[in-house]
Length: 302
Image 1 (tube, rainbow, N blue to C red):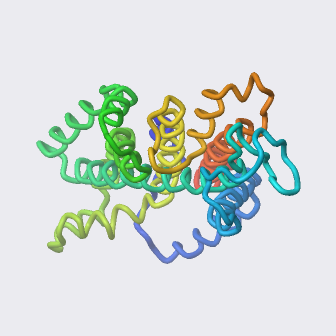
Image 2 (image 1 turned 180 degrees about the vertical axis):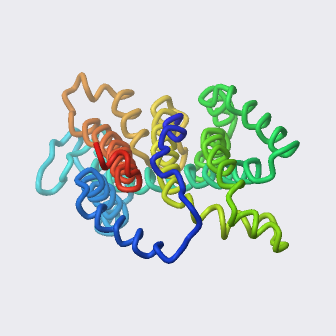
């Protein structure tokens, strides 16, 4: 997650001016010509559509016993069946939906907390900055995965939303530190001083003067938080601390390992979820690199 601090390619510039529309058109033109951004975006949207549309064409639940056991992929069962006769394709498409839900909710919670603290600390400075920075450092040094394991292990019923909230509550510090660094720089700009002298409230200045000038940076931060949430959730699922009332790609891997799918040669049970997690997270990072090249003139010159 420390990569957030390194994505400085979206360092905001000056206040919006007459050239803002021209810069937007230039960024759109560069985005259309950037292969990394196009590849990453295509893969992400492809899996997102599969997670949204796929379950609509499955006429049974993902954990329902619907067919013969350990059946390889066929026209009837596209990804075969498990040792219990469950449809792997049904679990796969529902698992992709759960993956995006975890990424959006977990990354979203971390993003909201991190940006709120980062903006407030960077803009206000002084004692507010010291207190919020101390809070960020305290959470930052906590072993997030250990805290998540302990917290989730003691829950009787674990759902996707609960898991996502816990992930978001433990992964926001990197976003807070990165946003604070950018906000500190922007807080001294002339247009911010002018807004401050005009009597605008703090959050009004942050949302209308500072945040728009680092919008690309914020988008890339959310992408990194999304990918981090997906990987964290997959890790929790794999050790048996995933949702108790649903299905996910990580749980598919955990069940495949628990029931010796590798030893039995049931590759269709563990390869699709493992490959999907890898491609989704990898494409998010490729998308992030592409956006960095679009918004960072120094990278475009390389």
